[in-house]
Length: 275
Image 1 (cartoon, rainbow, N blue to C red):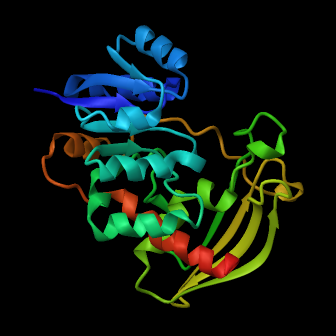
Image 2: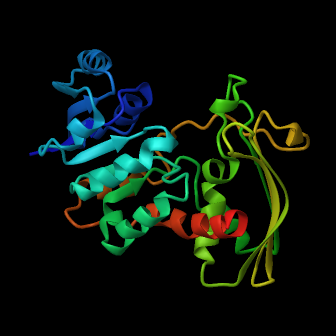
Image 3: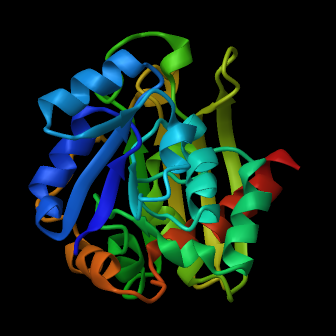
């Protein structure tokens, strides 16, 4: 008998992910939800889903749900990841998992109780590639921009360039977490309305043997000159950790996967920049 999969957010990305990765073969597409019952019903009818909810909480409280696909916006995503895991529901999600310091305490609780092993992080960008490159080099330049990702010039739509743009950098730092890591901030800029980081230039040194020159910037930032355009990120087919996803779905045991790598680097940057 197939386990039941529910979609937390009734959006096109979620249903595309289910189709592109053949999840309906392995799982029963059981339910979806939205903050609007009308939106949830329309989505369910369009995708042959029998059950729908007008709130995320109602879906999470359904005892028949085994897996949840969570593609909610970063600002609210972790809250529902936490609720799902506490309700013994396995979660499939995308990066980033956490985007504010308040989440760190609860993230640490998930780690300490091993519930984090029921969280699967989709690898859309080959998260390990920067670390693998660092093994053979002494100096790396890491430059990224949200250029072309945001279409509306609205300050409230801006994303934090450090915590939402660079899983590869976070993974590299996580892999070297037992080494001496020093971060030297050169310049940074915060959005006046959202207080999110829109520009960051820093150097990261690891054991004084590896140096990473970092430039991160948003597409609305006056410091955008000389940065590399980052194209729209789309889900790969298959995703980079497609085999791991299959194992996560089919295994009855807890699954140790990529999701834990975000905790240590996030905490480190919080300490360096905001404390």
